[in-house]
Each structure stands twice: as C-alpha cells, then as structure tokens.
Image (cartoon, rainbow, N blue to C red; front, side, top):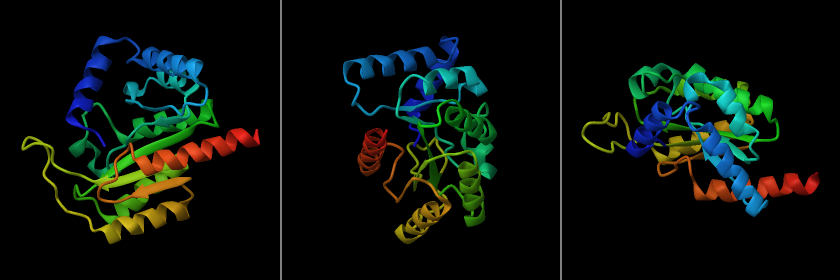
Length: 203
C-alpha cells in the first residue's frame, strides 16, 4: 500500500529525473543480481506517467517481480490517487512489463474500505487478470493522518477471505487478502521465492 513517504519520493523522482528513475531501478537490480544471482528482486514502481520505455527498461533488468499498485477500484481512482495517475495507465504498465518479459511475475495491490462496492472490486480484478497480472494483494485502508481520506468501512476478515478465494478462482498465481496485508507481505514473498525457484529448476 502507498505510504505518504512513497508519494513524496515518487513525486520527487518523476520531477527530478528525466526517465522517472527507471535507469536507477535497472542498475540497482543488475548490481544485486551480479553479486548474487539467487537474490529475489521485486521492484515496486511508479507508473512513469505512461512512459512504456521506462517500464521496459526495468522489466528487462533481471528482476523477478514487477510490482505496481493500482491502489483502488476504477470508480474511485480520481478520488483516491494523484490526479496524474489512473487505472488505464497502471494497467498499461503491468501489461507492458509482462509483454516484454513474459517470465517476470507482475504484482499489484488494492486497498479496501474506501467505499468501493463488491461489483467494483470484481470488475477491477477482472481487468487485472485480463492485463496478465499474476499476483494480487488486498488490504484494509487505514487513514495515516487527518489530512488523508477517512476510512469508509472496516472490511471483515470473512470478506477478505472471500476475495482471496475469488482471486484464486480467477487464476491469479498468488492472492493475499486480509486486514493487515500490504503490498510487501512476508508470506507472499516466501511463496513467490519458492515459485521462482521451482521455475528456474524446471528450465
């Protein structure tokens, strides 16, 4: 999930660096893999304002998981996200990463409790699968400061469990859904590490 510092750092990155920091991402991945090829690398990236060349640079850097968060359902994008972001731009990022590097795992995250309906959640998950997204996390939105959006609903663990089952049925390779789940989720990292090791062993 996006934290206030993520938004600040992301804005600085986009404003101050011509490629939105894509080259920095790519070089970091390369250096990590050069030191130890068995390190699992996941990059949580911005949308680069739709610059697919930047997306391609990171997707081909050697990383294992390309993560970019859509944050919320389509209908709440303008209400929740920076006005420069939108779900179609985010879907293009995730779709393009998969297109240029089919064996990379793509991952996204959605916050619940912002006033979204079940139909809106289902429709958004459908769009994510259509874009080839492999991994999905859903967690409870929490209001970080009084200046941020208020929580509209505290979603029950049972409802989170429902969406985890829906994700599995839809064909996501991995779905983590719970009140305390965040985009960087330890159980998910363990699962993805094992999945990637199995893939490499089969090659």
